Length: 209
Image (cartoon, rainbow, N blue to C red; front, top):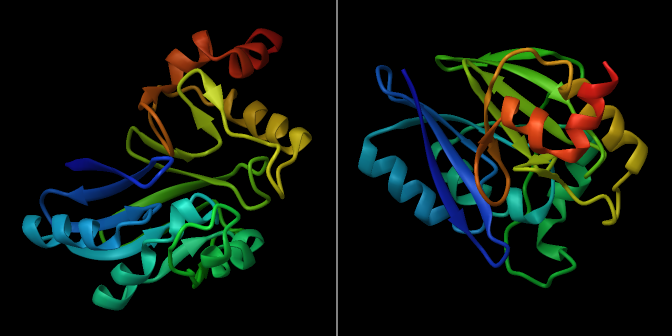
């Protein structure tokens, strides 16, 4: 059985998720934000065994806390090669916020799925907010990063943002026929069928199908 712990941190704030298997105790950390020590404390208190870090994109507020996790547990970092340079320069963010640079070690660009530890993830490329945006799927869970929020979407006016790519990504999400629980990069969590009804960006695509 999979469980998800949400840890919100930082000035924005960003949602970091620890997905763990209650039977095997394996876990992955999705989008480790600023406070890597807070994340490792939860992992150790639960007796979890980290097997990977997953990045939905390379912005500093989604990868700036990865370094303490990688150094302590020796885990790989999955993400898009298109955002590798962005993550690698996270400390030079435009907000002037202290965080660590992050090295993506395992690229997901050429695959639709991968397995690590006791987990098997589906991968959907969702550029728009950044060139290397990715959504991850497992069981009834969707990690949407800054592509999809509750009744909204991620910004496209930041460097690397692209309106047309975001619309293409949303059109792909609109084709999904399963009601995933959506764990977003900021704000509240939601579910996909709710977004199909009440998110104006997604509902427009659903009406056109």
